[in-house]
Image 1 (tube, one colour):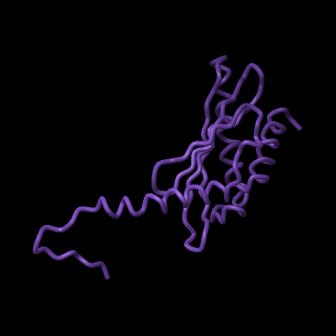
Image 2 (cartoon, one colour; image 1 turned 90 degrees about the vertical axis):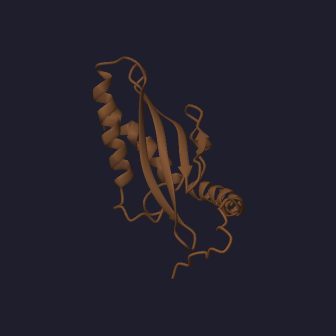
Image 3 (cartoon, rainbow, N blue to C red; image 1 turned 180 degrees about the vertical axis):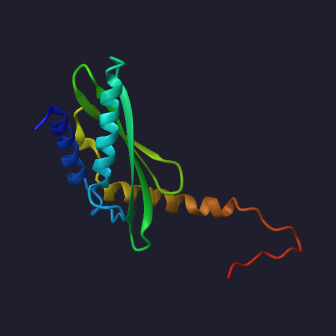
Length: 152
């Protein structure tokens, strides 16, 4: 097995352990789609690294569906490739539903700091629920004498 395949295997193990695989996320994508995107992005930065000796950034998105309403959660995994040390580090995870994204910083080689996909969903869901009354209050009132349109 090549060094690059071993590097990707480590990341695949963490993706599965923390439930970011397609099955755990109830994703309509085929099994392995996230790892395929990660592999392609990794191959691209490895090729680009021949032109540069500095750190290279790459991001890989995925979406999960949770709860009874199958609420979508959009994730973006942000990695850094060190061509000198031949290492790929997960730097952060961005997650959002409808509002502002929550960012989880991951210290180098501390993959245990990556929160589980369900935990991230629950935190986002609480924030969205808490902000719902504010969003409803911010809706403009109709002018006096004007009807509020109803959607049927």
